Amino acid sequence: MATKQGKKDNRLSDKEAMHLAEITDVSPQQAKDLAEKHGKEKGAKEAKNFKAEG
Image (cartoon, rainbow, N blue to C red; front, side):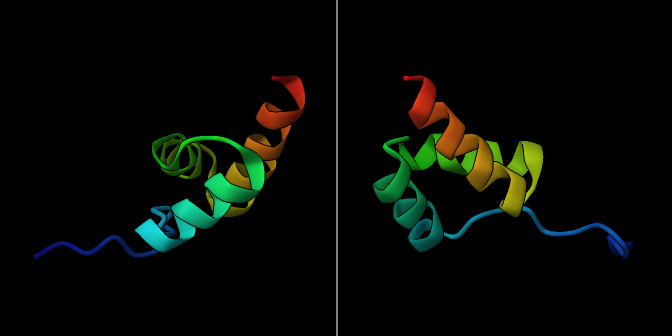
């Protein structure tokens, strides 16, 4: 079975997504999508930018 060595797990748990959604006014699904696309740390920054632009 192949492993994903060297690749970070950028998925957010439901709890993490809900927390990010509460502090940034994005939906939990949007928070998860941003984390998968940009990584957890940058995804949080993108969500805050999304809130500021909206």
